[in-house]
Length: 141
Image 1 (cartoon, rainbow, N blue to C red):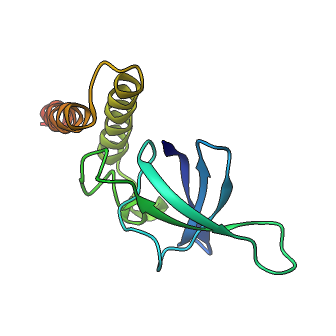
Image 2 (image 1 turned 30 degrees about the horizontal axis):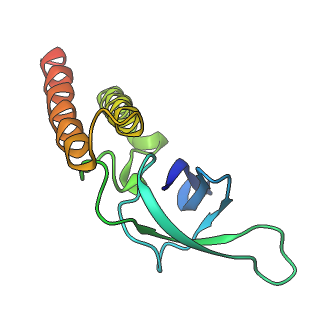
């Protein structure tokens, strides 16, 4: 099973300009967004194709989700292009993002250790995200 180990949004002139991706099999490249599945996140099981453009050393990756979504679909964790930019920075969003990433990591680790199957990991991760969001919202009241 190949997973996304790093999904890093790139910026040009302070505007979103694609993603750099590292996969668990050490493949590194740039996401071809128009041909890839939407809502990819770190820790997600995927399949991919890689193409090295003529005369270049980098790879263009077309990535598809492998047999279902391994993490919750939520506005802050899935489409990273909607994460706040410098001008829209919010500490609450940062806390929620960090908490969600931790929930995803815990569920992923439990799945890899064989303690949870795929569906259980998804269910627990969704529940943990809802609870952590609620706790963060309560702290901000």
